[in-house]
Image 1 (cartoon, rainbow, N blue to C red):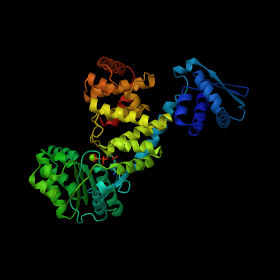
Image 2 (image 1 turned 60 degrees about the vertical axis):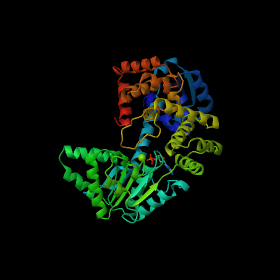
Image 3 (image 1 turned 180 degrees about the vertical axis):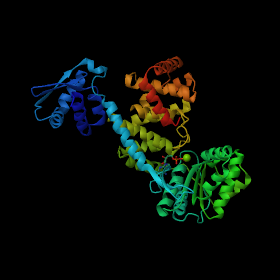
Image 4 (image 1 turned 180 degrees about the horizontal axis):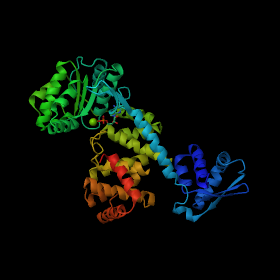
Length: 478
Ligand code: ADP
Ligand code: MG
């Protein structure tokens, strides 16, 4: 085994026993320099790492070295070697990222559920229904009791009295969650049923494609075989005439066959202007329920539930503060919480009311300024269209927080992803330099321009950057 291989094995053993943030900070760019007469010489890039590792992890390192190399290792010494900064040591951040990606893939796979594809009778893994959305992890308060109960009834008796079920409410209140939860519930109770979830936007695209390719017949067939049809954001059908027609036929065929239909929308049927009157009246012919903004108690309960899901716990005062101050949508509530959780996990920083207030303020400000649309419709299938998506994806990719990305730090590890972020917002979303600058802590438009140009310049030669950028774009659905 080469020195580097041995060191990587040692690091792999150490990593689970050391806090992630510490591990990333202190072991970055370290390596084995030499092993002579029982002494293992570890090269570290600076005195801080030297002091920290020698004082905190000496025993662990020795132990791991004995296991990996041999019992001949008697002592470990740490030598500062400035050259290691240039990347000669082991890149633990990359190592960690690879592990994390593996984990994420695992979680993603677990989220995919079996769905019977219409017309084939075959079970195939589908990304369409997300296992995360269940009826039993939807927090029920006074304001959403009715929609939840209606969904539960549909889950138990599809095609029963609540047909069609029409759920409406403003963005981020849990419509998609409930809709997908109905699908999961139906499949749980009736594993042989064919469940189809689709956004109205996607339906329109499919109609257009089918017309173009002249395979309308196949298209019709696909949807007439469904037992439970879940269609999200039907307000999108407004002014899309041929799609409305097609949907009308599908709808009627399914209802006649006693199949279940559940629809969601951002407004009640009566306010769907530019929608065929016949469709409007069909939409209201079953059960119409409204999802309302959750009250304080429900918001708090939602936060507690999400904390449990993320496996974190923090000061009840902080939770209270968030529930009191973030009240526009559950999605926003979740966004803030994710940010707080990232802070805890990456930096071992426990949230205080002050730090949380700062996060809320920044998110609000960014939303106001670059039209960061925290509440924008963002399901698994639609292409990300707003700045917050880009910022979140870049932050995740480079293991920094959203706060840091839009903040003022001039550390290299943060400036680099920040420049990429600005570049993407400029080139993919077309925001102006000035607007982007404002969103990134009020930077001047020339600073933003400089960042974008610099990234563009690097993109000509830097293969790694190209790869990173492609990966990020894929995440963005581009
Ligand atoms: P909408 O489709 O109405 O825009 P979503 O269903 O996408 O909203 O909900 C946004 C986020 O908030 C999702 O992550 C969802 O799980 C969560 N959420 C909304 N309402 C609740 C609730 N009552 N309990 C738990 N999570 C909720
Ligand atoms: Mg939705």
